[in-house]
Length: 503
Image 1 (cartoon, rainbow, N blue to C red):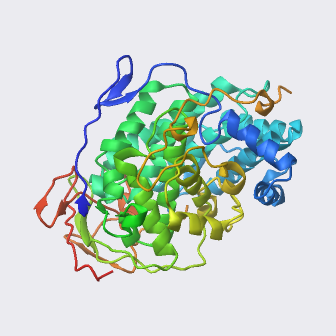
Image 2 (cartoon, rainbow, N blue to C red):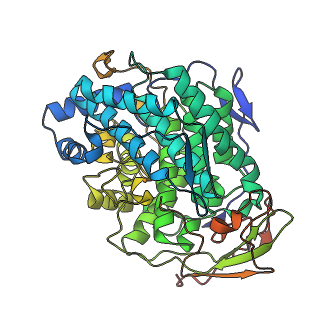
Image 3 (cartoon, helix red, strand yellow):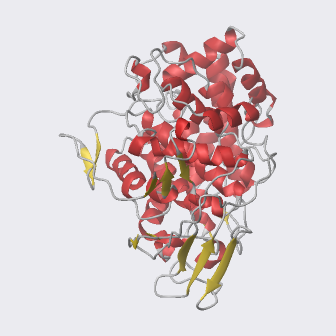
């Protein structure tokens, strides 16, 4: 059965913060509680100490990475720039963030304080120096990607005696979170469909991570609400606009990933970011992995199958793009882009382990591609440019878990294991506590399967945002299905279903 996205209502719980019906329960956030909980950290340490596979292979990838060394020296900048026409220096930032994260993670596995001390020194140096993230439209990518990564690195050492927690919270909130929040509201003064899925998802991840790290419940509620009901392409029903339960029905169906019509790299980035968003929410007791009949699983399965060389359906679409009150154009994608089977990103272990181990659900394609990518590395292992640093990585070490008791049949939900439903991550082994002592640059062009037309040529300077055309030329949406048109803020995306046999 083919299903095109529609609106869904969610009721709010009493005493919770609510944004448009999305509830976030009252009470303190669990720390650490972004990508890794205290229990997760204790599990990694115990498994590596016991010499258990595949944890040891994952840990070997970590220790071999040049960023994971206690001799790393930070190079903080007062202003970080990303994007054409600016003195770009953002590579300094993402290298330092990954060094902080990898050192913090290595500390939790080994217990050696030198690694925690290095992570804290890097984070403190940046919070004492950074004043702004600037640049072209790509500044929003920098704020989103590096904001959520910064928060995750800092979350691992927030209890360290030398960590300047309040100062880091102020930097994260005012410099990263504020920029990402603004993007989700204004989209750089472009029509909401101008920016592809991964732009929204990067900024959604930053807003969520910043909200948790800074104990800002309203900010977390905004992020969760956007995931469910947002107008932009990162909202789940826009990122995965069509679900077909009849394709691979024994797996629960497939959900067409919109950005598969753009190119492989950005589709992988988007899946990794949505998985990151769901994992961080899960660790605070919010189940987005299972939202809308596990829609994300169907989208991840689609991308995994496509990347493994399988045939996947694709619904042709046209998106509107341009500046509000300025230039405008449209772009049509008619098929899933080509794939390079050798392209690997460290995103799959997290997704596969959630659905197959926590939930006991079938996820054949995700499982196969996770095995192909194992053992997953991290920043610096996938090339020297920003795309090699888009994910924090090391999923083989950090997300491999034992199967929860009492799994489920296909399409069901686990009911006998507490790990099958989210709960705030406060509990865990005290032994995991901290000692007291790369995106692809998101080019402007669309995929080879996209054809662009503009009613007027985009200028180098978009209205308001100053340059949205420079990276927005491959950007997206709002839409309708063949049976009718549903208006989304910012434009119309026309979905045209082709014959079953077409790709």
